[in-house]
Image 1 (tube, protein in one colour):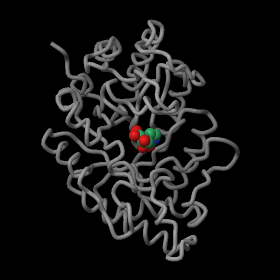
Image 2: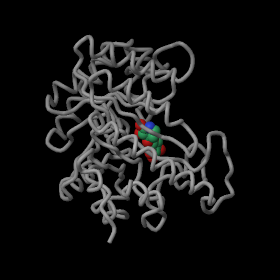
Image 3: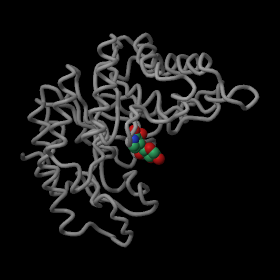
Length: 328
Ligand code: XIL
């Protein structure tokens, strides 16, 4: 008999998976058995929900919300303000030029109001702002249309609007490369600034798109400690562990090598040991997918290359890493 993943961590944190309109069918039993939380992979992004100024498309997002409800699972909302998967109309005026700051912020407010209010009774936590920190260089914030047009104030405003729409929702800042020494300092600086100014933010989301060698455990620990020192809760929001090291662009594998699997197992064991050490701060660990039959890493960063980054294999059966994690 296979132990339920979320039950192994019921004293520590929730266990979630990213899902989409297809995987709630193709992975239905697996999801229901092992996970007590879901995040829509794409269905609640701006371009999915609001492709034209006067058009909202809620069908797929609603399907996922109702799946979560039927299964008694929690639902995380992802994501309100991001530089990707955001439609062009948002940044354009009627003549196809660039919209002014006031209009952009009014559109942002209207989007946040509509979406957050709609899912008030089903979504308990939102990734309000996603990935605004710059990876490289000394600049704090990434170049984006949001920043160009509205200035840095759009970040605090997004949290304020979300809080007005649902005062009960937990509001997160979410980012990747979250353990990298320079980037984690920048994320800390941004979030500390928000907290100090009384902006309604409840947590930091660590995406945790990791691989079999990077980042190192010490960097992850340092990141967790730094973010925890803000007095906010932490969630691991998009975890996966690529079997390819950074820069490995091989496309010829049809299965992970023995060595890849060894490292994957070892790494997952270490990660969950570490998460348990910080269970006072970490309230959820969400994987970016459920089983290796579908992962976004089959398309990224190399277009068509299979990857095997999760705890369940292509047949949706537990991998060695699963057993190590539940038995740890
Ligand atoms: C990814 C999805 O998994 C893909 O299907 C889509 O094509 C691109 O976006 N950081 C995030 C997620 O915050 O929204 C991204 O999801 C993965 C990286």
